[in-house]
Length: 258
Image 1 (tube, rainbow, N blue to C red):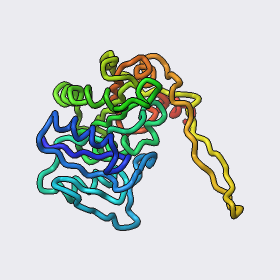
Image 2 (image 1 turned 90 degrees about the vertical axis):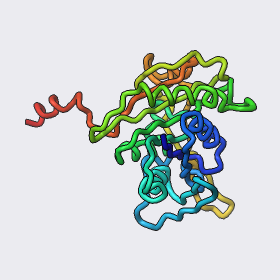
Image 3 (image 1 turned 135 degrees about the vertical axis):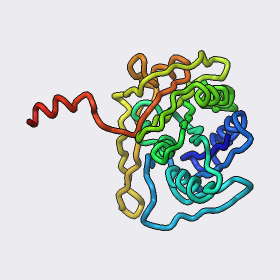
Image 4 (image 1 turned 45 degrees about the horizontal axis):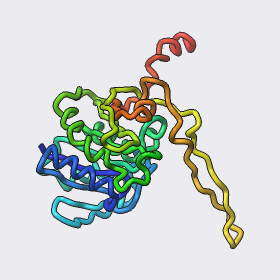
């Protein structure tokens, strides 16, 4: 199995090294194509208005001056064009990509592009909290449990080859590896108090700036959804599609607009 690894925290991020270890538990043919600089929060952004610099920094290891989705495109269509990947892994993100964070995540964006290109993809993120944020290895839960879970998804997951094929979003709970209770297959949740906001500042020269601020990450989502599972010590596994259609409203809207 040939695996393409990417992330949104950048080529030098510690979570990427963890993902490389996870990938190495599944295959001995691992390629890394990651952003040269941090690209957190860029979502499914792609760059088509300027050229994208590609730098080989080691055997099967490349840095791209672009987004995670750009890395997937360059990896598939240039770097690995003569030997395509069988699986694309993105992460391990520093911080959760559960709940509404999913919609902003460059980690997820890479997997969305992979799915649209017709490839199987798994996004992996490490939830941070009081029990692991200041630990010597805050990625311990993902480091220990990531390889077996990826192998299980590869072997036993539901993979489709339809237009909007399935991708998987995995979040590891904010606890030491020994405290992980297992995994749960759950839906994407919603934290009502986790909305982004801005904090205004004025520079010494009088210019106005703003910092984008995130919301509370420890708020629980509904039972049976991702953040709730993570807060209870479980790895959350969420199957996703890129299709954004609200199918539950189609018939009602047809009637109302008739």
